[in-house]
Length: 207
Image (cartoon, rainbow, N blue to C red; front, side, top):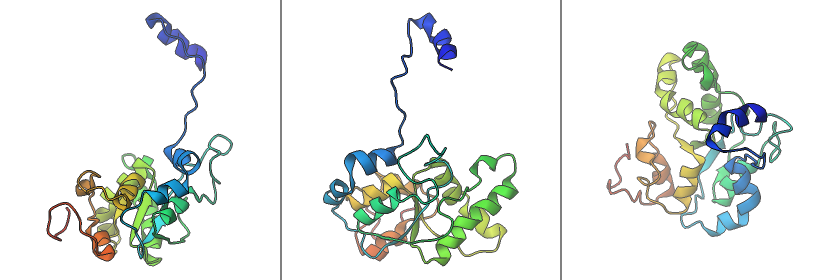
């Protein structure tokens, strides 16, 4: 692979020397920054909020390459959530594939696969789902209404990207965090926290 890359970039006078280590930011949060430093930055404790961490199938895999967390029973995001003051909800599907790669080729199968973590998190009484995977976030959030309609389910569970969730605890305004772009309104989170939404909506839905 290195030879193929060098062949392409040599024309520009470049050469790859193999010194780059690709890391996921969950690895950086957990092992470089650390949970105690994250806890120190909290200005809006998320106490009372029940959160379902959804890792999906790729964040801590392949086994042997991504070594910052256990691929079957990861806890790095759980500990970040706890450092922010929230309660981690334990449910069976936190590392199950949501089928995002099938969104174009086989939407029916995708919807069946995405339904599982949404429903188990809801049944576990989670107030929201938090994920570090952009494809998982798209599937669980943007496709949630279609899934609820397809299977006649009452879902309506907010899905936040982990950096959005951290930003809430750090007191950043929801608009800066892009929460107004989430498909399922996260406003119920602010209501449960009894915290101002800081977005100038006077307590109305952020979306």
